[in-house]
Image (cartoon, rainbow over all chains, first blue to last red; front, side):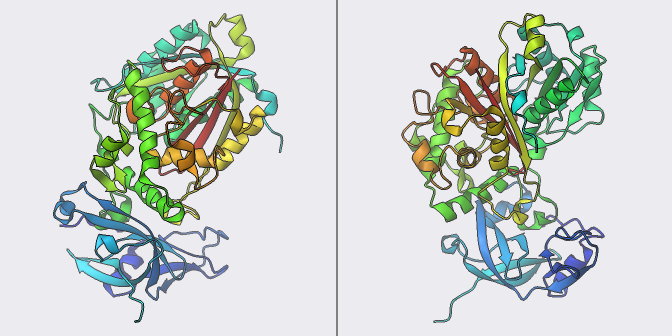
Length: 133
Length: 379
């Protein structure tokens, strides 16, 4: 069983939207800044006029790690597994994982979103975007 | 902004003291009190001379009013006392705070201490997930550094031998240090053949998990003369800066607040990186050393392999780093041992002494390179 995320008043809309098939990010209505994870004040202009927007689902792979040791029972059977730092085309970044063989991972590789539901949690994961041949 | 250059050399580290390192089976209040007694003895002063007791909060188990518990254990009622939470940067930050307080007449002599017992107590803090990202398997502080290490490799093609050179230097110096927890030297073959923990990070890139306590006494150079302190070491430069943002929100993963922190410290000391003879660089993970060497200006960004290879950061090399073994070999304690070794190098009493060394740079940092502080000691 995957460890369950901690749902808070701040991030509930984000997790709910994933269950509905959308990856959201926050945007400041006043200055246009965009970010993840959820917060109350815009980190750029400090206003509280925030709105949620849906990401189109394109991103790039900034960095990744491969776990060869499991720090939680749930991941023992998945070793070795990757955790990735992903930057959405819209700008916000998130921790995720890439659904690809480890030897195919490259820095700045283009990615596409694939939301997968596992143990009741809808998780934003990514696949390598195959360039059209 | 006024620089702190007028403070350079006006304050000293008057004494250093520590417990043994390893698995000690003692509570952290006791370890702090033991380290403080050693530091007072090294400075040849009494606790009655001290009117500030500043603690770095223990990493593995948070407690309320922690500084007051240590004061009680020492039978002290200091004018200033408490615990500061800034990860591994806190030790040097507290030295800065002590100097600010003394300079403004708020106190006279400060004891600064840190202790923790994750080896015999709970190491859980080092295995925990990061908030909502646990379902992706995002666990352990080591992973933060591995993520930064991978980005450094992507941007600069940093070879794995560069990371190995950091581990080899620490282990060589640790093997020579009778007090070190891990006294086994390491070859590049050993390094490269050890299994990955969190790839690209290998076993020997990761610091030890240790019990222990360490403390320093800070006062003005003038007060040290009055109290006949036997071996005071002048503080020439101090700096601090914080990146603060979580890993995923940092503009750059491969440059940190170390740049600003070192800039403040070198400006205060009126010195340049090329003046440094020996350095104690925070090595919770080997990538932290490589990036700090770049950020401090010892070499250009992305060129650190040329700086560390062929034993150049080992004793006898161009600029020896972590001459008592650092977090990778002496003790995993977050940072105070590096200050101690800087003091010994400037006293000329280190086990792996750099002959004629006159300037030592010391870095402390915390979180996933969230926080940074710099100390320059010298004559």
